[in-house]
Length: 151
Image (cartoon, rainbow, N blue to C red):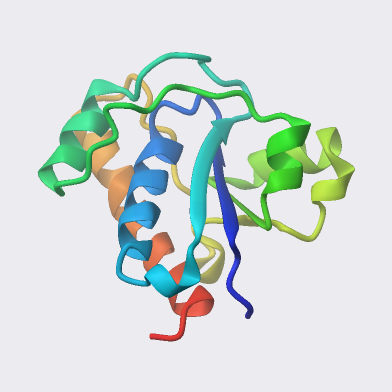
C-alpha cells in the first residue's frame, strides 16, 4: 500500500478516542520522517472547541505524548477532501461519513479493520474505559503502521 500523506481519524465527539489515536499515530510517524505524513482528527458530532477529555490527557501524558493543545473539530467536506485515508472507531462512523460525504467511499476504514475490532466510546465511563479503548487503539495503530510503512 502506498503511504498516505494525509490521515484523518474520526470518532463521535473528537475529545476521547480520536485525539488519543491522533497523538499515537503522529508520535509513531516521527520515527518515519521520510513519509512526511500529516495526521488530524475530527468528530461526526464534535464538541467543537473542547479540549481532550482529562482521562485521555492523563493516559497520553503517561506515554509522553502531549495532546493538551487538542480542540474538538467537526468533520466537514474540507477535511474529507484533505484526507487520503480516514480511520474510524466503529462501523457507525463509516456509515455516517459515507452518507454525508459520498466522495469518501473507498477511503474510510475502521482503526481496528485488520483485527475486526471496534473501539468502544469511553466518554463519561471513567479511566478504566479509557485504558481499554487506548489498548485497542494502540493495536489498531500498530496494525495500520505495518500496512502503511516499510518496517
